[in-house]
Length: 200
Image (cartoon, rainbow, N blue to C red):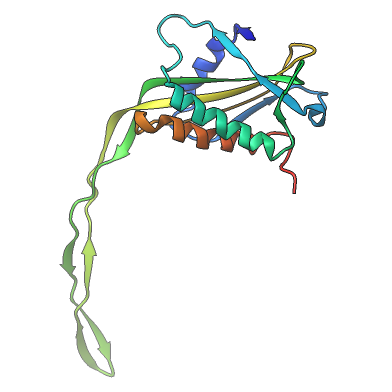
């Protein structure tokens, strides 16, 4: 199934507004009993963008890694892919990567020993004290460009077609070749916030 959302301007706006944090953001539809959801089916999303920012290209291997991580986490909550018929909800994820900037500290300067001799008086006598400490001068900050990625998980009720839950996370993509593994970890972080908790 294909889902057509017109809300990508909001999502892409978050990319520019959240900076380099990696906290999970959640939106949840009120009045929904999430314990009713026991089966799901993957859906493809027809994403609308302004033409300047689009979904990151992803390989089948990366896609499989992310989906497997999501399915594993849902299985811990008693939610499994539908075997036949209509699922309880449709599940899809969006993945975006864009260039961003951040301020980072420069490598520290080498520490140097600094001597600070002084005198103390004890019972009428002056006692010299030799005190040496290590001083590391600050080296300032710089601006660097890096790849910033956002993963968004959408849960759509199969009966009403309402988007009932959305979780998203923003993080740096330091190694594009391992993006699938990194976003798989992000998916687990997102699902930690899902209303249905793991079964013991």
